[in-house]
Image 1 (cartoon, rainbow, N blue to C red):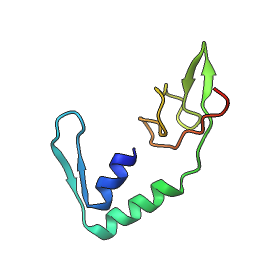
Image 2: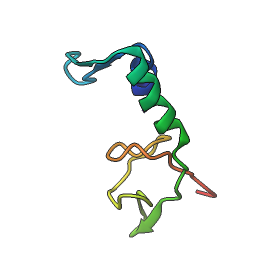
Image 3: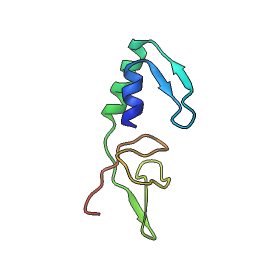
Image 4: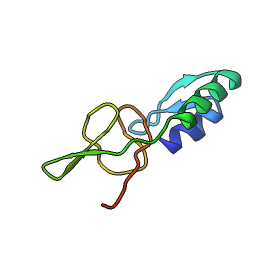
Length: 79
């Protein structure tokens, strides 16, 4: 997610799998999106059978600072 934010700050989103440019947006719009992403409050994961799930969207997360599905920051506590 931080990589997406960095690329949005430059007005470009690139597919990490193919390297293809997906979106080119003007700097003003990119700044608005980045601001909204940075304002999101972190959520703690919920746990089921020892696996973490996003506390916002409920889908499985695989570590990292952000949910790969909804982009919400993940607050990892004590695990």
